[in-house]
Length: 412
Image (cartoon, rainbow, N blue to C red; front, side):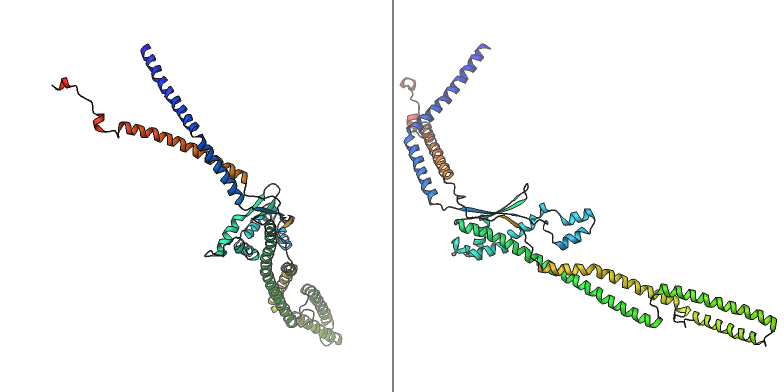
């Protein structure tokens, strides 16, 4: 066992010594090539400084905006959603914190980019006249220079534009805000116009239906003479009851005198005439010949049904018009009003400090990269020299030199 421990320590020590020797060899190579490393690093640093100074300055202008106080809903939409149940109205109405999706869709639309390219002549600004499709190339480069940021805590939207001219960068950011409001207003106007046309059509349909119902009621009144069915019916029933009571009273008086004096008595004949008259008036009332309710008894159910159908339709169309009339006026107002999509908190101003390039980082990065590459080159070159010597010694040497020499005595 002890010999084995000695052998293990003796085996580990040469390995550690060999690693240290290789490390010192690497340091010696780097020291011998210090002028090369320093020279390459210095040249790279100088080149990086020159390169960074040749890069144009880019400036970032930012405009900060807020959504409207109403959360993006028009008064008409707010009125309609306010009449819905609480949960449904909140779901359809949404909240003001989630209203930026619409504005981001407008800002990132092709229409917005095309108007920017045309308004500021970005094809010439970006020097893309020689491209096969200069307009598409300008839009693609513009997308790289525009960014949008929504702050979830303070609920504002920032529109940032990068450009080599600080004044143009600020003008482009403010132009995007103006176009956002204009495009949003156009879209809302289109929606309001379609809604106004729908409400207007429904309003005129209800108005025409009400006119037809009124004409039908007028014809019904002329035919049946019914204007206020409840009052007329009550008065008619009281009138018929009165006629019936008079007829019964006259009949009783007639029968009493007739039984006492006979049929030839003058008073009996007078009562007989009065009895006949009372019965005739009662029958005429039942046949609808009275002006109070001039409808024959057999036609009363049909007349009542028609009367109530017309009255129900009149009340329904009147109620519909009461609902549609304010909506129609509000829709006409919505079509004419201009809604601001966002409220500008901070308009973009020409920036004083550049956003890029960061020349210090460029110079530092290139210098460190040149230093690392030169060190790697020196180490790799030294390793290759060692491997080449081993290759020459063991593989590429001449066979006659490598063959062992046999003593002459053994040959004999």
